[in-house]
Image (tube, rainbow, N blue to C red; front, side):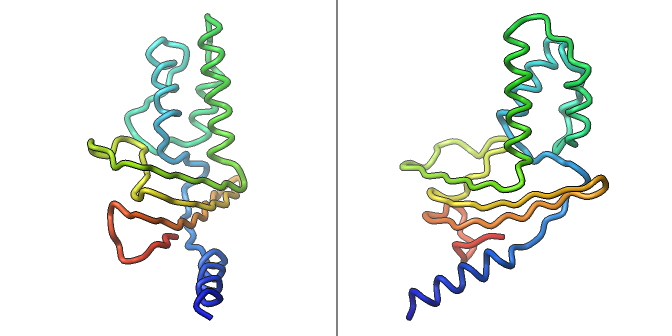
Length: 152
């Protein structure tokens, strides 16, 4: 009976995930994406201000469209950025994370692992003037306790 109740609560949570609306096309903090954009910006391949996050997807796309790569390494990084943007803005995403040891340093930019184990489901959809991101997480071994293993 308890197992059925847990399944019902989980399904209820997933079906009523809280909506977090972003302005049209904002890209969430991502350390890998930021590092690649900074690398290209430092070399003058793209012109993009990285001082404020989150950045809009349109702003990043505009900078990439005007990019002038001179070397194959710059073309590889441009392709990696496009691939990462596609992954971040995918219609449906499943993410998982597990750790056997707690980090000894403070949390860095774009690092969102508040628990030793987590499973996340995300749904993205957007139109010309809107962008919606729904995400739910189940966590175990929380580093920051909030009284619940579920986050929406």
